[in-house]
Image (cartoon, rainbow, N blue to C red):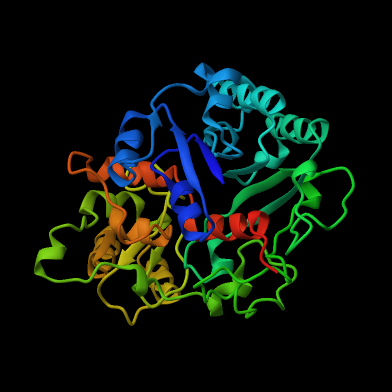
Length: 378
C-alpha cells in the first residue's frame, strides 16, 4: 500500500499501519499544525511532510504521489459535544468537503477514516456516504472502544473503512462481504467481527475470542471490564527521579473541582477519554491517578465525600490524602497504544504533548481495522 496520510497529526495512523504488519509506505503526510508536523518528522524522518492546509491539495499533485490508500482523521471539534456540534457552520469542515471532491476525482483504492462518536449524525457524514456510493465503493462502519481490545481507556470513536469494488480481492478474508442496504447510523457495527483474522503478534481479547459472547455492549462497555489490563501496566515506574515529571493537583484545583474528578487507581481497568483539554479543564477531559490510600475504592471515596460535602476543610483533607496526580503524556501515549519508541522533540512542552495526544487516535484499534479491511489473509 502507498498511503496518503491526510490530517496526519503526530502520526497515529502511520503507527497503526506499522502495527498492522502489512506492507505499506506513507508517501506524504499532510497537516496544518506546525507542532504536530515537527513531532511527526521526529518519529518518521524519512516520510515527506506537507505543512499546509488540505484545501491547497489538488488532483494533479495527489495523483503524482501514486497513493492507492488514503487515511483521514479530520478535525473532530465541529462534531463534538464540547464543540457544540455546529459542523455545518464551522470552517474546519471545509477541508473535509474538499477531500470528498478529491475522492471523486482521484478514486483511491482504499480509505480509512477516524472521527468522534456523533460524526455519523452529521451532514459531512451524509455527504461522505453519498460520495462513496456514487464512486462505487464498498465500506463498513464501526463504533469501537479500546476497552474491546483490552486497553483500559474509554475512547469510543467512529471508524469507516472502504475500498473500490473494482479492487476486490477474491482470496482471503473479506470484511466487506456482508450485504447491507442504505447506510444509516443504526447500521454501524459496535462489536468486532467475530470471524475476523487475528492481528499478528496480538493477544488482545478480540484476537483471542475472549469477548465474542458480547453481542450488545452497553453504553459504557462494562461487559469488557473483566478483560481489560490494569492501568498499572501503562504507567511510568515511580522513583525519586520520575516523580519530578509528575504534576500533582494543587489545593486550589482540589477545592474547586474535587466533586467532578474521575479518580482511578493503578489496579483499576478503565480511564476516561483523554482530550486536548486535559489538565486545563477538569470535567470530562480524562482521569486523574490516585497514588495514596489505595485501599479506598471509588465507592469509599464517594461515601467520604458525602460525609464532608458541607465541610470544605474536611473535603480538602480527603482530597489531599489521595495523592492525586495527572497522567503524564508518556502514560497517555501508552494508553493510546503508541509504540515505546514514539517520542516528542525536546522543545515540545508537556502541555503541548497532552494537547497533541488528545487530538490523536488509538493505534491498536486502527491497526486491527487496517488488517481486517486491507489484508488478504485467509
